[in-house]
Amino acid sequence: MDFVKRAQAAEAAMRAVFPPTPLLRNSLLSERYGADVWLKREDLSPVRSYKLRGAFNAMRKAQASVYVCASAGNHAQGVAFMCKHFGVHGVIFMPVTTPQQKIMKTRMFGGSHVEVQLVGDYFDDTLAAAQAYCADEGAHFLSPFDDDDVIEGQASVGVEIIQQLGAAPDMVVVPVGGGGLSSGLRSLFGPDVSMRFVEPTGAPSLAMALRAGAPCDVSPIDSFVDGAAVARIGQRTFAHLSEVDPNHVLALDEDRICATIIEMLNVEGVVLEPAGALAIEALSELEDEIRGKQVVAIASGGNFDFERLPEVKERAQRYSGVKKYFILRMPQRPGALKDFLSILGPEDDIARFEYLKKSARNFGSVLIGLETTRPENFDRLLSALDEAGFTYTDITANETLAQFVI
Image 1 (cartoon, helix red, strand yellow):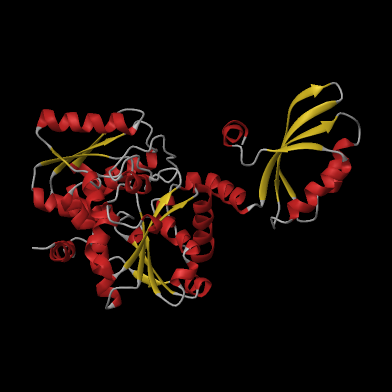
Image 2 (cartoon, rainbow, N blue to C red):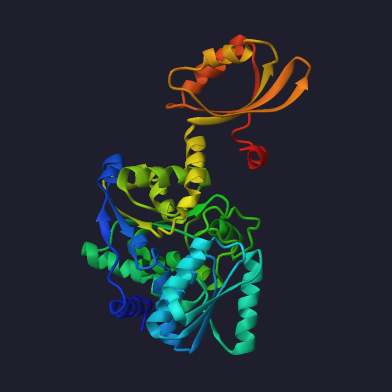
């Protein structure tokens, strides 16, 4: 049986567990890009990501009594959900640093069928512990992506797209982490459907593998886009992706993805995790290519911890240019603060104001965060500061300083 038929069989078997996720036309994006844009809403699956597909397909084929996985997020929840469905025992290894919300949801989906073991500060330690457990106990290890049955299961996303549209679209835009979803879709659609693959700038595992001709470690990675922040793409997944045109792999800045999360939440009422927003934000890079075409962007997940919302909003504002941070050298004299405040425009607001230390008898250093409604307002403000003789340093893009003071 060829790959397409196996993926179709996996999709058909899933219908006994959960319905197809919606494929919804998005008017906002369609109008913005002059295209027929559809969102495949994997954020609306029972575990709010596509990961339960691969877990289901691998587990129905392995038919073991004990399953083990290592994950800090969506894979853990997918495996837990399927352990309960199949009535088998699962041992979920998660880093000690995993947010309580994710631990709670994993336990909720698995119920009495799963036990969660918190091991290690870093994922590599967690993975090693899970694999050691499998060796000692003879349990079946479930890879989050580098497994032929998992790849086949993730390809069911594409089977549903074809069924829901009545035909394959002109283009599919898909996020890439370890490569399970992207390799499955590419193998399913073949050369008839144009595909674009999107990675976060801080974890370019596919782009680097294509350049090297083999999977390679791209550590250290930025883990902010946790659903796609993988240091090394899978060996099996890369076998499906090795012929991808490097020009079809896009890298998006993490702060930029935050702007998409905020817009989709505020305008569309759609809750997306960072990885789930990758394909949607990539449309802005593809505007000339997709105009007049039917395009499907995969919204891969919506497991967003709202405790992260202030950070996401902060990063989105900094990326869009409406929020900046400065170290301002303020004269230590009566009226100096009033002089500074008089420079602010009607759309400017102080988000943070903190004296750091006095650098000299007559001057003090101030950390100041400013918000405005339009990026161009900063041009006027900085010109006014220069004219008034204030000395300042823009630290908005300085990541090292940002970690300590922002």
